[in-house]
Length: 107
Image (cartoon, rainbow, N blue to C red; front, side, top):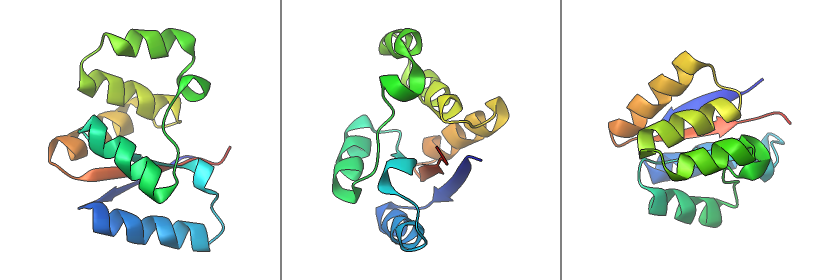
């Protein structure tokens, strides 16, 4: 089951990720999203979490997202991790508000 956690900022994201890891969730099952792609990459590196890639999206969606707007790309990535279309749209709205979204998968 895929789980979505909305957080206010990077500090809160770190707290949530530390708690998830202490409960036994592997880093490679945790994804942190931001509307700002640079921030998203920096958080993944700093927290040791995953970024959505070809493995999660598939080659066709990965290529399609290169030409998509950021919001469309994010919704597609959320769905590739197992969120419903509705939850993916809600998560993208959270990002529009300047907050962050953590997605936990159970590969």
